[in-house]
Length: 101
Image 1 (tube, rainbow, N blue to C red):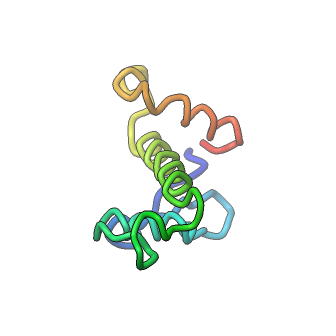
Image 2: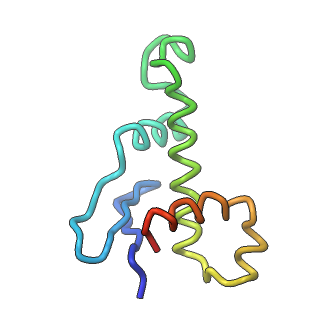
Image 3: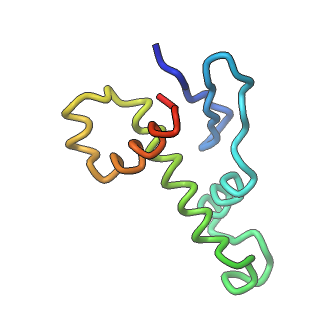
């Protein structure tokens, strides 16, 4: 039995659903980053230099965590998956250490 599952909300929009918990929605930062990645335009008008301090770094970090956890939940989680996705395993271990999956 899995402790969390991904539920699709639309194109590139998902949420983690934990057993017995209400379904959370993606954080505004992650949703904003997906729109930036899709359309190639940062959220504020002037481009890269008009964004809040560390906006790109925080959004990319959140996206990396999301991608690693989604891959873990969708994969078979066996030794072959772990070898193939070794670059994701430190993030997956960190998330699992917090009590998920």
